[in-house]
Image 1: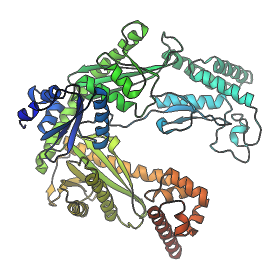
Image 2 (image 1 turned 90 degrees about the vertical axis):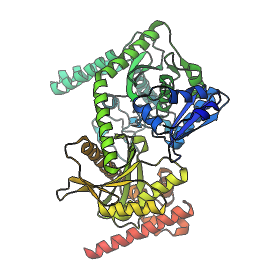
Image 3 (image 1 turned 180 degrees about the vertical axis):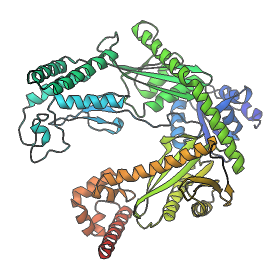
Image 4 (image 1 turned 180 degrees about the horizontal axis):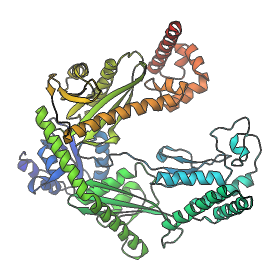
Length: 597
């Protein structure tokens, strides 16, 4: 550990953001402080354990930026974390977003489940979030069965099956009055806000009708539906004013673990809850503040947010631009205490497992460092490709921090149409990934893990050498039965590892995850159909440009017939050229295939 005594004496006692750097000058941690000198001294003058000890051992230098207020330091901290993705700022690794139920504001509304609500421009009716995805699906399916809403995304020219089974009013062939639509919407909105009176009456009437017709199977199905409603709403009921809607966050800390519990209160009902547990590195106040900010980058902000006393409510309120409150008494304080109790119970239930898992991962990490003679291996990046009979090549990269997947850093790659084999595909992906690392001066991994042997390692090393980058490489080599047999380092030396070791288990997990990720991306592209999948393979063409091309040309056939200048009317010069060459290459492949047949 370096001695920063002299440098620390020069640090001001003002607010600001600080950045810890490793021996390569890469930022590995970003924090903020009300008093920069006091916070930075705390890293080098107190007894450290676990994750914080690992951080400090890797600090070769630090920098700081003084700000005029704590709000400015918070904004700067979050901005720098987003820019550099430091390996020790790894909150919300799963990058998850919860589903919402949406009732569209179209002339003929639909009810559906959506994610990524922050990207939506239309102001539709949104209800959620639903941490329980199954509950959200059951609710949407039930309402769609009871109410004859429009089911199709685009109106068809003739009535579909839903119309004939009385689950749609036939909007494509009939004129439905605005009054009727408003009545349906009003009842659905009332139910989604927690009042099931209208729907219960409808189900009971249908149940009696089915029973009188001796259709006992349908009657039982309707009874089960009614039971589901009663159970769901009973679980949600709490003793609060029906007009109250807010989020509530509390925590529990033990042995450097921080357990967080979030309650979603909507119209006086406990709509759902979320939870998370992570290892702390900074003070609980700073960790929890960072968690909340990152959490609401994905979720819709509530009008009010209740937070514990350790949080600076005014600072958070200024940053999020919502009303942030600390409860001290009354029913909300009781609910707040319940959230803390839930967080405590959640942590105590799995704390022993977490500690055991952390110890096993740390031992496996040390074993790998020893085998490869590398001082530290905390961040690993792994690559794989997927294709369909030598066409539609795509690449995938997964990132693991301390053998845990960091899904927010996963990346997908569309590969150039000129690529004909796996090695060329890997070469392109490796180059694009680490050229960007150089350009953005972002954090590079401690190790690259390839799913392959000698040839993959040679190609990867060639690319890194061309970029003048020194990153250790290791290949996972399979035997004749397609099972991982041994490691191969960049000197092409075989390294045998015990099949029964934790290291072998964790490396196998990385191998399986990158393979799954690449294949899933490929399947997703293919499932979009011929036009979408063809355009998806061209780098630089996203959803907006796809729609513009479709609007201009109408079909893939017309796009193939278009000149480069005509494509350039929709796309910029470089992307138009890529699409033009890709379509010509595709036609050539189809022609050759026809000749072979």
